Length: 296
Length: 268
Image 1 (cartoon, chains in turn brown, yellow):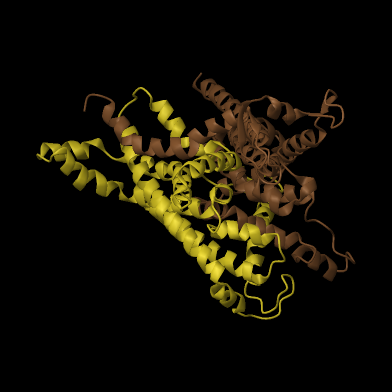
Image 2 (cartoon, chains in turn purple, blue):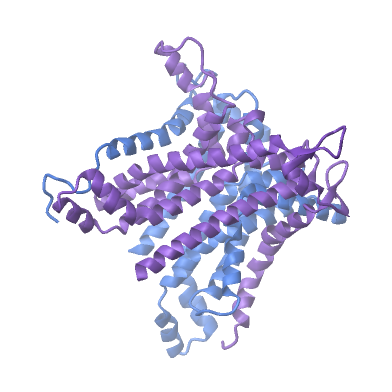
């Protein structure tokens, strides 16, 4: 029992599977992004920076020396970031009151409310996206209700728009914001809130100067937890959006389908990974700093 | 704490937004379920109660096919992942820090951090290369991919359970001349069972939900229920899809509820 060998031995089977079917393939993606594309998909084993070049730039078809920004790609990047930020914002605006509501329930009912937030989190993302599709289709529930009430004469086109993607992502990722916010509120010192009111602070003042500083770590955790899957979204924009609302995940998938440019797809995937890891490092640093500050 | 009429936990409008959020969260799912029992084809007009769409789903050979494949895959992947995660948890819990521990944690949690689409295309590339070399096109790829993806989910509850176990129990067994194997078999393992069960359930639900990875790893004729649904959503959807989704939802709900009950009794 003295060496560390047996600990490693117990972990080995799991690590082998993870290396073979999760971490290892990521390294291959990195390698593939520096190769040349094959004609029918796949790669030719020739070193090339073309894929990384084409992530951001494009050459003129007739004059290969004429280089310009790849506007189509930049548009997709911008849409991915903007929609993810908006999703995070919507989830924060709805998630904060919801988490507060749960945290201030009496102890025995709190578990039920918490369970109600957790259920959607564990149910299939595709089914929840499908449920949204049924709501906002041209002959879906929302349009039927609006037309029945006489507010509109013809259905509003909501599917295949950025609005649909935004709605779907906010709907699907909301629990990821509520849960860390709730965790932060549960640990909150409510006597400070009481002290604030004793000192004649208004509700807004208490919210801003007493409550928000205390739940800030939960806010940051929730924002990162929503932002990361939003940036990586594939199913929701594929089902609710269309060709004009493509996000980074769909652009990556396209290169392995009709695009038949695996190196470009690999380079785009590495780009997504960099953004996600960057967000994670930012999160760990901020949380780490908060922990240090609390410990004094 | 005495409650005065002035509640310190009240913030104006918050209750309303919270209740509306809960309604918005559940309304689409409830409507989806309700219209799976609709007699007509419409998803917005109620034509009376009927089970015809469930009948249609059960009689649809392809739906039966993909459902059975999903269940088989989820049970297989979750079982393997739970075994591997149990061993890994025994190796990393209650042992103090040891060199390489951080790396093991990073590897175990890696599938949680990388977007599914990136894992998906990475596996697509890797699997394509192996297929060319070996010619094997069976379910092994999907089992491996799902197992790896389930490991972090299975690991979490098992590790949490192990951490609550009292080392003194094993020490007491040793004092009573139990061999380390006997102590593990009769003391540690039975106490780990709730964690292992919970780990299996999480793995099962996660495997059942996995769409993107399956979509990119599967060979022809290896559709699972989620990839089948993803393909169907592009077409005109009949309430048969609602019926399938409802059954799927019910299964997840049962497993998640059981998971909650198991992990809650643990706390008491």
